[in-house]
Length: 169
Image (cartoon, rainbow, N blue to C red; front, side):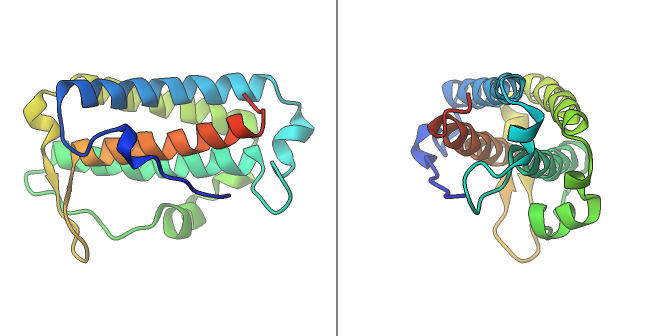
């Protein structure tokens, strides 16, 4: 799938308006995926979106995997005194271990929707200071809860825009 990151859509600088945009993007993306799925037949869901691309089923497995990794990082940051993130890639390592793509699409969508509601519940309760909580990575630069949530929102937005460009939403 071609990736066109619209990184300028949400500022790297934390502000009340950028936090609101992250929350809105995360919520709207979850709604979009459910609405897109409702308009597709089981055959459309399981077949590649375009030749050589993932199916919507595979996209949903990928979204669930990346949501897991992002949410775990945010929870580590909020729950631990000096959180250190493991060097784990959502698709290569986490995805290979959990194998979401082997599950029914309906179960993936339901799990994604539930986990997204949990993520939004956690994020909406954060004070501005909590959004700045640092997460350390042993082999790469550190990040914050804000930047982790921003990355998740931008990632979801890529998939929303791609599905829209194919007339799937």
